[in-house]
Length: 212
Image 1 (cartoon, one colour):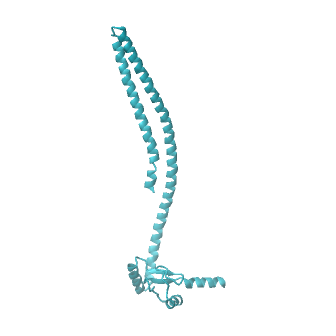
Image 2: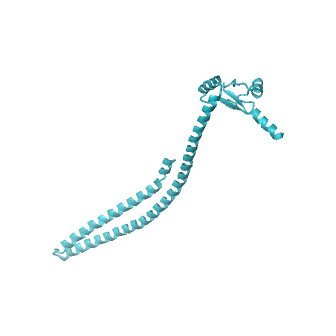
Image 3: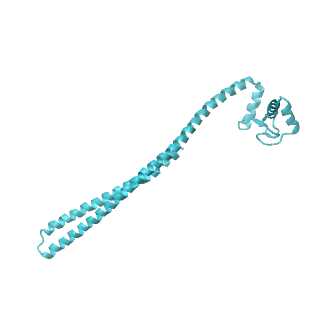
């Protein structure tokens, strides 16, 4: 999400690129004006040395042409200056838009970081509880759990709330189901081999207590 947030910054970069291009074009026009002025200066120097009226008028025409050229270039510079103001307005808008987007991402990122820290603490707590519970269980049961867990990708227990295994969803045989509900013995799912954990009896007891 941080990379995605930072990627949104292109909306600002694109408008800043426009500004840089605008400045380059204005600088190019200004250089053109300097070159034209240099030409006018040379024409004036040559005009002072003209020996005939025709040469003199020719230089005047050339100078007039280049002065008109300067006026034309100056108009282009003005257009670029107006365009620059418009682009700067785009930059301000894009910066405001990026700030809005970044603020939304930052809030989500902060929430996720808080969730990560909570889950880390929860994992530590659960690991501690796991150690405590394992120590209180018969060694053979722990060995059975570890064996099934190793074969079943870490999931050794299946919660049973209906007549079906909570993991593989295969219906439990009536006799096995009755044993699961009525006895305290360990029952194994005949389909996936996981330890069946009954919640039906607990729910039944809770409903009876509410009824009483």
